[in-house]
Each structure stands twice: as structure tokens, then as C-alpha cells.
Length: 342
Image (cartoon, rainbow, N blue to C red):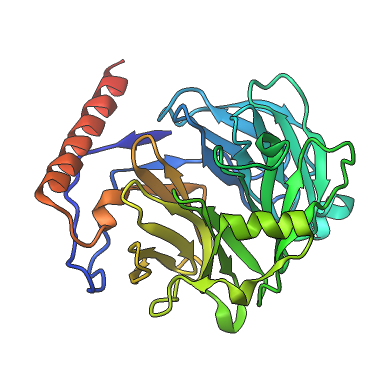
């Protein structure tokens, strides 16, 4: 279940390390992974409900913040390495992936499935990209590609591809638009200016995030000539210790959050940032709720995650922001008490 309470956040001035992690506003207990999976993947929909992919089934929160889930569909393989869950840009379709598959994934290694967000239909195989780890929809505006609403950017292995999930070929691997990511893929995210951010998960460049203009990405797709990852603009040249960029997101103030080994990094719009230690888990993934401007940080081997206010991690909060954070905490407290009373 999920419950939130009032809190006081600890914040620091710009350029300083976080001496203390801000107090969580609550926690969430997630459904466990399927029998043949190691972990689950999560994503909030536009209506504020949390969706979970456990490697075999898609589950949806009964109502925002309820912490109770119902199964929408089954039919995955129970992959040993569940990849992401996301939605097409028009919000009509859920997309889930089997990642590397691993020994437990068997022949389902790399498969990507779709299903209607309304449920009532089984998972349908839509693509096949070995070692995919994350995917995001194309921007909902400013795109001239045909069928853009059913296309996804998929980070897999050492590159990023654009995949048409409505293609007649359900084993499509799409068209590569970024190549030669050193040390394997991590996560990817897009900012409000339609610039694509791509992380490197391992090796000497672990934690480096490269930025690409959408016009260049679209040209790479049309010309079938992928961009070289190292030619992208290095977004975080002085603070690269985000430890793989797992579950990257932009908050409402334009700050970039990136999870990883032992914690996460928080970057200002200019690329400067600090690492925040969250614990001893080897792999923290972040899931953002834009409706509430909150996120939870889930350890790879844990089904319980702390929920934080994104505003509490911004280095220079204004007085108005502090008041808003306190008010949000009071609102969560009231909602929690009302649910208990009911």
C-alpha cells in the first residue's frame, strides 16, 4: 500500500553536496516480480495511476496513490531481466520489454510487447531488440515522421533505435539513430526542447550523459546513418557520477534526476550537479510522478520504495517553494488520515 505524511525537507545551497537526504513524503510497496523475473519496472500514467510490469503481467493501480493493483493483461515470458514500461505519445498503448531475457527468459530475449491501455487484450509482440533497457515515445509535437504516435525510441545494447510498434513485422529492430555507446546502454530521456539525453551504463564513461538535438536524430532516421554517441554534447562534464543513469527524468523545474549504484545524481539545467547517496542497494531506479512532482527510488532487489518530493532536491529553493513543499506534505497527511478513517 501507499501512504504519505507531512515532512520537513533538508536542502542545501547550490554547489554543495547533500549532507542529508531530504525526508521522504511516504513510501510505496510494489507487486513482486513474476516467478522467472528478478525485478519489476514502473511508470506513472497521465491520470496519476502507477503501472507495473512484472515480467509476465501488466498491473495498474486501482486509483492514484491507492497502492493496490489489478492485473490488466498477462502473456509475457517472465523475463529474468525486465526492461521498461511506457506509453505511446497518444497515451493509447502500453509498451513493455523483456530486456536481455537472461537464462530464464529463453527464446523471449529482447522481445517488446504492446497492449491497449484500456486492457482487455493480451500482450502482442511488436519488436525484437536484444539487450534493450529503456524506451520513450517520440515527442507529441514538432515531429514530421509518419506514424510518429506509435513510434518509440529504444535504447538497446550500444545504441538507440526508432521502432515503429505498428509495423507488420513483429520482429522489427527499427532504424538505428545513435550508435557506439561505450560500456552498454543505460537510460534515455527528452527535455521540453525535444533534446534527447542518452546515458552510458558501464565502463570508463559510466555516468556520462550525451545530448542530441531532435532535428539531428530525425535526420539520422531519414538518412539511415546513425549519430555517434561520442559526438553528442556532454551534458554533465564536471559531475558524471550518476552511476549508470537509471530511470532518468526531468522535474517541473527542468532539473535532471538520474539513478544508479547506491543513489542518484541531480543536475541543474547547466549540467552541474551532485550525487545523493540513498543506501547500499547496487542499483536504484527512479520513477517520476509529474502530477504530484514526486518520485520514488526503488532498489533492484526491493519491493518497497521511498517517495520523495522532487522540489526538496533542488539546491536553491525559494521561500514560495518551501511553502509549497510544506503545503503538499500537509495535503498528503490529510489524504492519508481520510483513507484510514474510511
